[in-house]
Length: 208
Image (cartoon, rainbow, N blue to C red; front, side, top):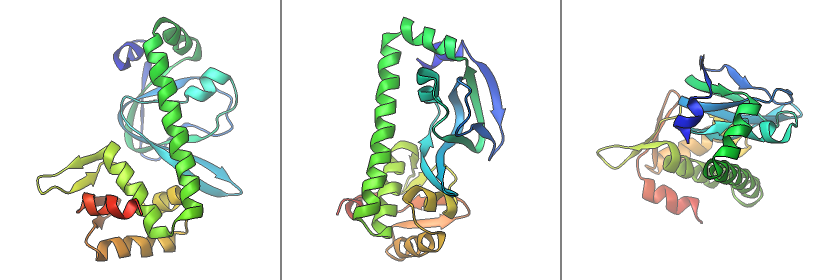
């Protein structure tokens, strides 16, 4: 699907932190992420919630393109990003010609909704360390790189503010939760860098 959609796109580069799509905007194009990672977030009453990370090969902005409603989230570059911009008409035409691609897009939207619903459930059900463990464990599956020693490095650079937004807790609480996971030998951290040193044990904690 990606290769056929790239042929319809105009390539654009974004530096770290640059916005690809802004919440509330009424534009209707989509982006296909070609390299790098993008963050999807929303804001309410001045509080940002990080809804997820999109990977190379994924489409962002599809809900606005297919429904015509204002953007429901902001998409920004997490590090340098290369993306293909596809106009709404070209995207719709592509999906009409490729029912298999349309099914993949629908499945991707469903996965995003499940992720968002799970985060909302986690907020009510679990303390901060478990919520953080659940997010890190899920991210390891989709954007982690296994190393020779069995640890998994997250390829997306994440700040404590990003993690706080993703699990809906204060940065000070994230700091404490990270410290707890480090003390238990589950992760190591550096500047915007997280390595899961014991993925199996982290998964066990994430599924209480």
